[in-house]
Image 1 (cartoon, rainbow, N blue to C red):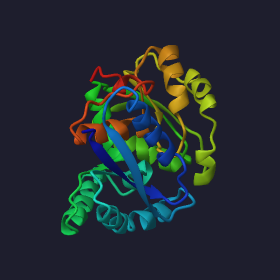
Image 2: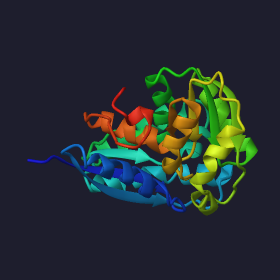
Image 3: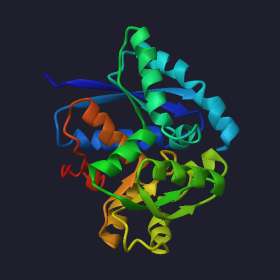
Image 4: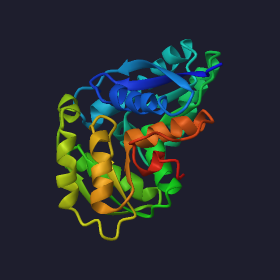
Length: 250
């Protein structure tokens, strides 16, 4: 019998990409592996990507974890990298533990992945020490994200802040522009490229092009989250067309 998995996602209310890219990857996987996936979301209010709104939104994540555990999902993904990183160093561990406890208390225990934790873990998986980062946030928030990643033990050689304050506009950013943005960065000494440090900024269509252009593995927040979810479910972390991390090499 084909095994079915329920994928739960805790999503900012203005996010339009998390429910596009992660299902796209897992549905692509269905063309090469037997497992089947369904997708279930709960939303927390957020329109502008500023620290105050992010903190208020994060406070709603407990409710979302409860709602999704009502559906007895098999894994839970918290889909806002900057909300976690804006709460202070190492906060992804605190958040994952607390939200998992909510699902246990509700009798629907499910492991919790945060896109922030998934990204820093993915860099370790591919053995990257030095990276370059592209992020859609305003400069102060981008610097906060870079600082969080550095605190996890990585060297950020260069970064670009695209300075898009409105979260809906982040979701409308053309991924076709990303290769040009990366081409203006010095990637010579980088071990990997973080093409989108944000699950809302679309990047999947540009991953193969940037890998071919730079000869470096490319990771995005949504690719890292998908990898972490598959590993947590005990499944082979392989997805066609989703870059080095999901190539089956790791």
